[in-house]
Image (tube, rainbow, N blue to C red; front, side, top):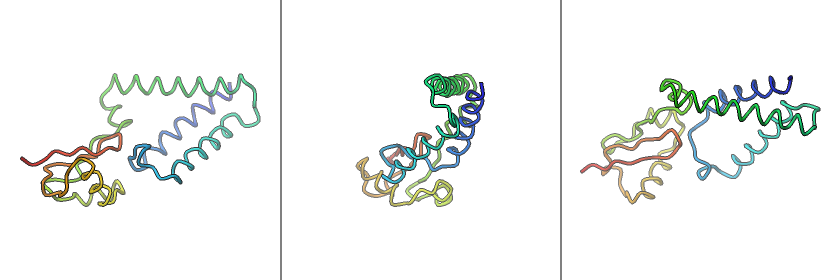
Length: 146
């Protein structure tokens, strides 16, 4: 039972910690950031199972994480307010061709990354963009000025 409690506490802790991180997709992560994710996974495992290397302990921890994730998914589907907290909200980062500097600062998103994403969408100049939106999943959507 102790493993279940540890896993639930660690799940909540990881949720809180990841809400403070910048929005990024796996494709946008640097190799070092990927290495950190793997390392954190090992550290979390040690904190949950401690000296219990049994199959049962691993299964309990995994089932607890899966159950917490399922509950969180249900809560985000059921209540919009929870979805905003868990998933985040879209954020306007370019308005009428001008970067929204404060939004970029809060998200720690360099303008160079916005320009790179614009080029990937076939946009060579931000002056042709009505809105650029940083989506909750870390991708950037562009709406052109017509």
